[in-house]
Length: 99
Image (cartoon, rainbow, N blue to C red; front, side):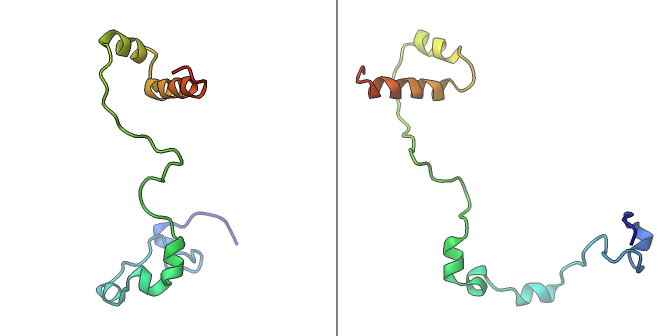
């Protein structure tokens, strides 16, 4: 069997066993459709991945503090990711009990 690509004129021929486009779903399909929970069951749905962002093992807390403008300017000059780097530096100081 050859490995050539199917052309539009071949899609109904035996030479091209797979149609280029799947058939459209009709109204009867949607009338018979049931919720995933009903079809798959509670056990399956409990293991299914949840939509959205994953839960962090060390969640961040948003705080508002007032810092001198020159200090913030200096931190921002270090480039993209400055908040992450500064958080790591603060964590290190706390771990060393220097802050």
